[in-house]
Length: 380
Image 1: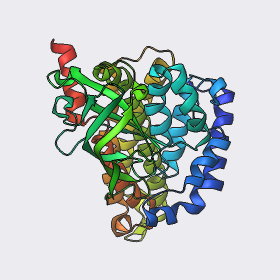
Image 2: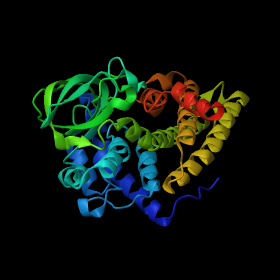
Image 3: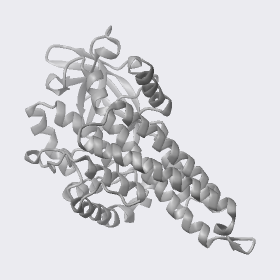
Image 4: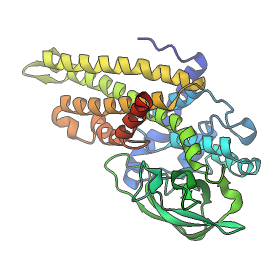
């Protein structure tokens, strides 16, 4: 089916993204995978190309365009290129809204120009060794010392953890407040007592630096509180829909791309003297995946439009996230199987997509959490 949600401007932006990937990302990606981190130069190149801060007001150096469809294009093209290491989606669509929506005028002037140029790389530190989706389990504390916050604790699985110049830390500011006693504290590179641990060794997305972070009596200026004190729970819930639709957009794009390359592969690969595509079982496998992808694409595109218009709620974002990522996981597994032994070789895109994509059903809220959100809304 012909997609109906993009205009000529979106199509032109897609070509810009593809050119950027060809020139600035793909020639270096193999080395980044070996290094376990992308170069800061790639972030600066993204800034020069206008790929950072798409929705940030122009006065701070951003694109000034809140149309989410541009972010969707960016996510689709990076996914199809097999280049999740340069985490522009995390920067633009997850952390960006916190800075633009909650930041004071002073904070915006201080942080957003670098955010848009690529000079300031961002991360959000929520997950801890003993707390993932359950915010009530967060133990990191920020104690009010009058003229500063005293931050103590540790975080893990933090994307951009090594590169980040600005880390939005979820910390407990009211000890007895549970999930409603949390605040967002912004820690800047170089703060005394702020240390980075290991660049964690993952099974996929090797070039995306994912780290442990440690905060030992870090003195954070009072003006680095982002949003309301004890307001982090509401702030986080407000922005999770965009995070989850972004993951869903990448999920269906990955599934569609895997289907494309596998369809071509079974046409060319022969077994028993004829192409694999001549075997009924193979045709049925392709037919099932194509149908599932088409149905999912229709729903995800509707969600993209709803979100661009400001109408996507947390329930439908959760539906999109769990369904698209579980589909991505199934399609990756089936496509690898159809490649046979070659599918297990890292030089084949299907093998890399299999490992890179496995995290999709986990981060941004696991599939089980998505189902709980949906179920509660229907059975409340």
